[in-house]
Length: 76
Image (cartoon, rainbow, N blue to C red; front, top):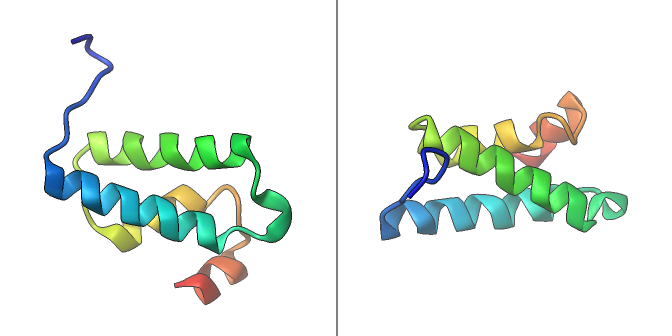
């Protein structure tokens, strides 16, 4: 396994999947494209690799570059 690869336990994977699904649902209709979904996944995995496990913080971090602050607060 290379230094860039991470292994997550099943519980963490379930959290990350739920966060990704919720983040995708929060996207505006025009943002439901593969490149945006990939960016969300990369941001979630990157933050989780740093130890973050809080679903709300992970989702907000993932969406921070995609949604305006007002939209992000409404999606919470």
